[in-house]
Length: 247
Ligand SMILES: Nc1ncnc2c1ncn2[C@@H]1O[C@H](COP(=O)(O)OP(=O)(O)O)[C@@H](O)[C@H]1O
Ligand SMILES: [Mg+2]
Image 1 (cartoon, rainbow, N blue to C red):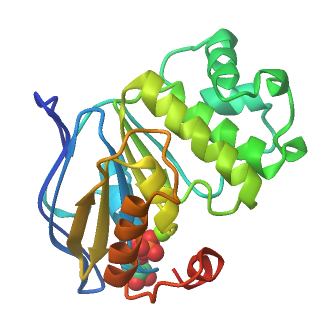
Image 2 (cartoon, rainbow, N blue to C red):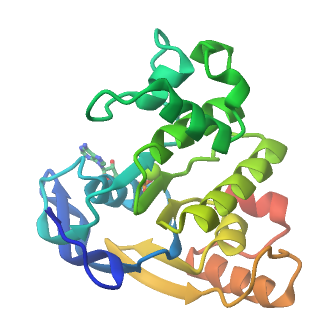
């Protein structure tokens, strides 16, 4: 793992291999993410998406190959992982170097719409609020690369839409690169500049989403991309509600 600020790219991965018990889950993978680019990563359950994200986050160093990422990066997981014995604002600052003040946490919490929950205990937060607290924790790191591992996966449909909009807004205001792992093809198409499909330990397919935001999933162009992606994922195109279960 090397930290290099490259001119145009936030992430450069070359010949990356990660094996568990002799089985290569990531197998000579190549990946580039441009500065400020929003990339979504799809793939069947167990194909290695989280493994890749953990490598990029610097949480897994038992790898072969080259990984260049920005020094400033942050990760948010599906489960918000808040410490129950620390108030929300202390959770937001957890693990930050130096002695960051409460004002820094407050600012990030306001940014995610949680200014009123600064002093709350984690167990009093709703699922959507906990996920936003987790995002605030990522934001105080002022990341050049934001890694999100199915951050909306556990949220109900409405909360999920709010959370997606929030991430889109944060990305636009912060200008950081985002790599979002999701199992939701429509979410990927609504949010990302580029959608990758991981399979067989590599990025097996990628599409560029050439549409301004905000996007409408009923747009025929996006519908076409959706069919293409579902096909790559090995899922029959069906009504959205059924697709969600299958994907
Ligand atoms: N720490 C680990 N030890 C052994 N096997 C692991 C470990 N982490 C992940 N794996 C295996 O690697 C594969 C990919 O896992 P993961 O990256 O979590 O998939 P995804 O996030 O795409 O669902 C799975 O077969 C999983 O069992
Ligand atoms: Mg995963």
